[in-house]
Amino acid sequence: MTGGPELRELECFLVLAEELHFGRTGERLRVSQSRVSQLLAVLERRVGGRLVDRTSRRVALTPLGEQLLAGVRPAYAALRQAVAETREAARGVRDVLRLGFQGHVDAGIAAAVNAYQAPGRRVDLTELPLSDPFGALHRAEVDAAIVLLPVREPGLVLRRVFSRQQQTVAVSVRHPFAARPAVDAEQLVQLPLVGPAAPAPEYWRTAQAPVVTPDGRPIPPGPAVSTLQEGIALVAAGRGGMLVCRRTAGFQVRPDVAFVPVTGLPESALGLVVRSPGPDARDFAAALPAT
Image 1 (tube, rainbow, N blue to C red):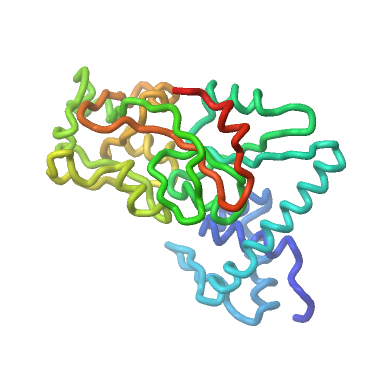
Image 2: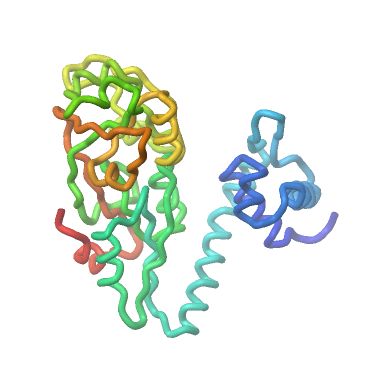
């Protein structure tokens, strides 16, 4: 097959590389699973080799697929940004802040978004996976991100720290912890902790799901998850506990999960992180709540 790839083929490949699942890729693109397979097959004929290994149990990129992904992803992101900026210029919007967030946008963050927006200025919101808090920033898909701390990433700058909250542990209502008014951090040795999956960096995953107590006693690892909702579902199923801040716990109320305060752990906190170089988002940072 001659000719260069069409944009739809590349878009399908990029989504599939992220999801590694044909069904979810079809859902995101609003096409059938068979159409995803067709688009991939056409692209593979264009490049002359397999881009994806697919079995009944898993989907993975081949080395050729990894090479194409590395080359196409930044170019596609730049193309989308150029189109978006041109569209906004036609509408009279001169300044668009692409903001990523984890979990939910609470009233304080929503108020900051509304305060920042003005004629000619807008905030676009993108939810970030729990398992990849910094990827969208590194790929320049967002200009700034509100993420759980800590942040120790080259090329990223922590612009603001806010929303310091006591940590709670989410457990099934059937677990003995559910009946307690509080749990000491040392008691977490009795509970596997659900935590974020890769590609989140190891230091960040360990901060969200510690592997030892403050006294150095090992905490058993629980399942690794990609989203907060996936983690809470596993908690409800009795697969372990999950550390979440008190504010997040308030957004996750359900009859089969209890949120118990944990003493002896540092507070959780959110940070506004930006790329360097890139938009500094100082005006937006100033609009964020103090606590």
